[in-house]
Image 1 (cartoon, rainbow, N blue to C red):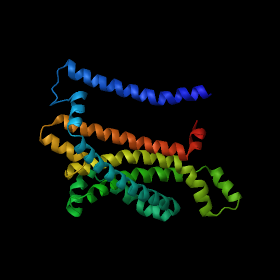
Image 2 (cartoon, rainbow, N blue to C red):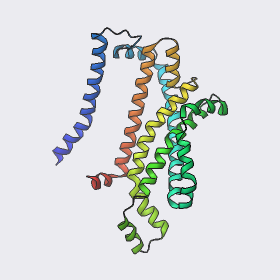
Image 3 (cartoon, one colour):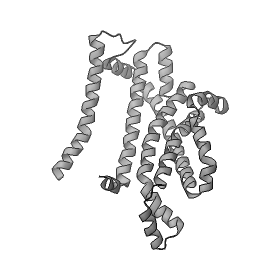
Image 4 (cartoon, rainbow, N blue to C red):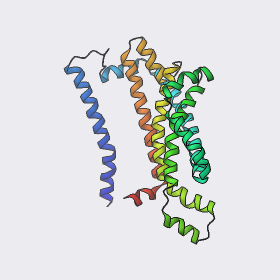
Length: 258
């Protein structure tokens, strides 16, 4: 058993690394074989050279995107969990507000981004608000799904132990819903990065989205790809931080799902 666990952990690290290496190698090979100019599709060395030429600039803009993403995601998590708990605690609230949430989510966020700039200015506020708007709905839906999927026998067990409604909610329904909550968090954190970039493209004064817009206007394609690579790395890091938090807080979830 220890050997199997060690092998499994090694595969978790080695297989993604091998896949990423193969993808980069294929990308590089295509640019060399077909003689593609860096203006159209920069090779990995061109992107590395672009990063090495302006590391301070790219890191500063990366930090701007990270701060907007984390702040907006944090607000979205609090808002999403609160709304989901209200929807599942009071049936009347769910019937009155859930259609409004669906309608709000159906609005294209790209269309809202310029309006947020008009309402809130060119600072970080419209970007944070857009991150909240784009990431909180998956958290709401996943949390509601988890809170409404509690097995009936667990509810009967809580009532047989003379648990109050609130005790049953917080000690039975909420713990049972946590795996679904983390599904929403993992989806939401990826969307949060997308929301930050969309807002930065609409208001290109800071962040990696602004780097993409400005480098495109100056025909510096390798710099734009360097920003895109940093965005991909940011999404991967945030996603696996949520995965690590889930494994830390819910070690029992993997056992019951195996």
